[in-house]
Length: 221
Image 1 (cartoon, rainbow, N blue to C red):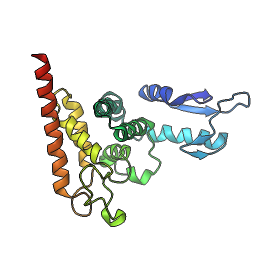
Image 2 (image 1 turned 180 degrees about the horizontal axis):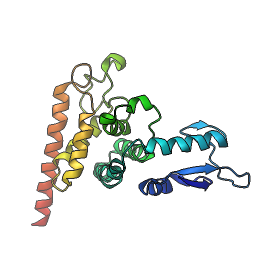
Image 3 (image 1 turned 30 degrees about the vertical axis):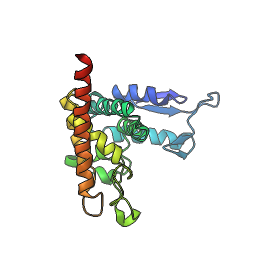
Image 4 (image 1 turned 120 degrees about the horizontal axis):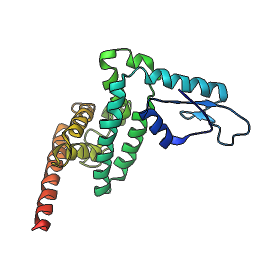
């Protein structure tokens, strides 16, 4: 717990969370940057204080080892994937990964029932950094994603990106394990994305890695 006047901002929040501190908002009428909302909900000083106390409780629902993993492995893996997305000019994945990073270090376990099982709590938390719905929404609800052409469905580029990270030789094994975990959260198959398209995205990622390796080998000769 670290009492604070004003809004410290996301950069400071990241630093403090990595040190196992969470800011607790104190209100003063003389402060121009008093926080005025919590997770998108406008509220007064006392609800904001309670919200911060809640984050302290939620953060402690994860073990110190799990919180350390988020900062030493999980977030660096997301940033590495964002760097790959930047080389491809994949703006949608860049935004998606930036949002996922904030969710990862925010320690928002508001819906406590989702995290009641200690054995699955951490995996569930990581899955929710990707969103609480599968990347490929069911065609029962959307009517189009299952059979949409390759590259046209929401999540195709990100699915490709995860597999590119899995195949790239320069990516550390610890990061590849993160990507493997994220891939396991994605719903595919019947009523989701057609398997032939999913498999094509996997092959395309592998081919892209091979082409990149050959290019680097060529320019080094």
